[in-house]
Image (cartoon, rainbow, N blue to C red; front, side, top):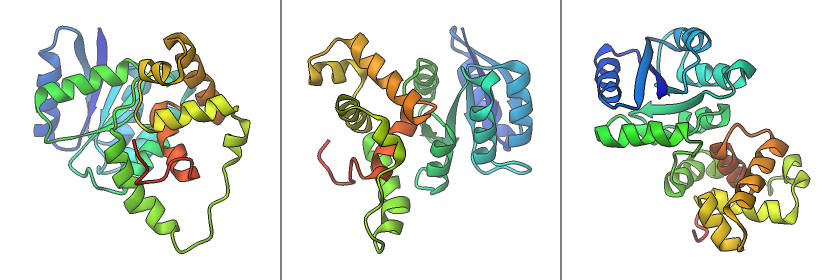
Length: 225
């Protein structure tokens, strides 16, 4: 059973999302929060598998709440999925940096929301390379264009040549199985590489690896997928 905490300041949206998830036999909504502060409090109390988080809320927004949840060692197994109407919002980059595992639009079909919760709980990063590239281009790369080339983050120096290859493939949206196929290694070895990379660069999950790859210049927007 996957437990979910639904966070949104609009009661109609909270109720609608809770109803969608509760209709699935393998999903259980264990709580609802009206703002980020309550979300953090309930997450610590209920230890949900997934927090479905709005961004723009009173008291504490989704960025601050995501950061607090993902930084709490007692909530290491809790994943945050952003549910937003602002798919082109620069705040999405901030939530991913804070540790969110991905995002999905509030206009998504019910089955897409259900699929998203299951995927995040399974450890997958729920963001397409195209969506991430659009956000990075608009809010990160564009801001850096007038300046000199960005220095390579110190974290990348910790990675082996093979781990850099794997990081690039993760950023291009490859699954562990696809990485294994591309590099002619076993899926277990692929997963091990990904886990080691996350440990070395202190990434909460694959979503943060994608951000690191783009922001470091390892993968540039417009590069072939």
